[in-house]
Image (cartoon, rainbow, N blue to C red; front, side, top):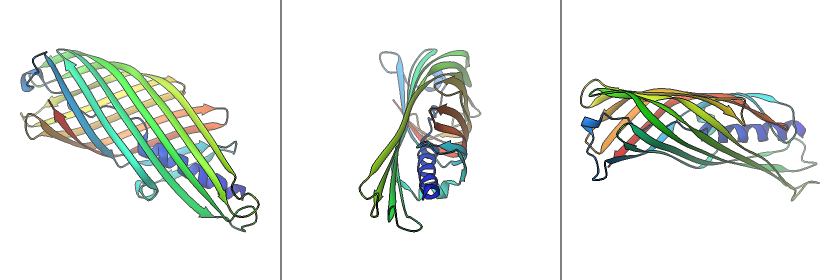
Length: 262
């Protein structure tokens, strides 16, 4: 029974993390000459995105020992109940303010081996990750620019277990963790043509976690002055360990996004 609960808790917690670990901004950083500014001089971008990542690493919850997991994105997708991911940026001259919000809800259930303590176990994992940062362009010309950035990332992960049938029927338990990491790094782009550009970022930090890092590289295409799209690859790692709640994982996979500029 203990083994079943452990595997179920770890899988759901891992699923929440794998689908929604904090996202670096995917909005393309466009050269000033290519952007139509608002009367105030500000430009704005909103970018919903999708990240098809797998997850590997060590996770522990509910006071149970750490277990190594290695899940593909297809395994994770089967347990997804709801997800929302979007990034945004406000830019004025060389200065920028950017953010990212992610929320996911995943669920899994399974029968116990003998059905004595419980007939089945239901698990729900909810994850929120929010990133807010500021940047300054240290390199800028007609082809692109490079920003130095810094900010904070807030994580909140909550996993619930409920027992059905047997001795433990009706009993529910929850394990959760919330922490904040300071982040710093670079993000930028380079236009090969007026339509095709390369964009990417690299962030690293710590705080509640021992280490928190995020890197990506993507190719973008600008359809119009208001719409563009990117496709690339992203890898992210985090090591959080506090009072028996452990997330020590690496997540990686393709990322797709569409950006709206105004």
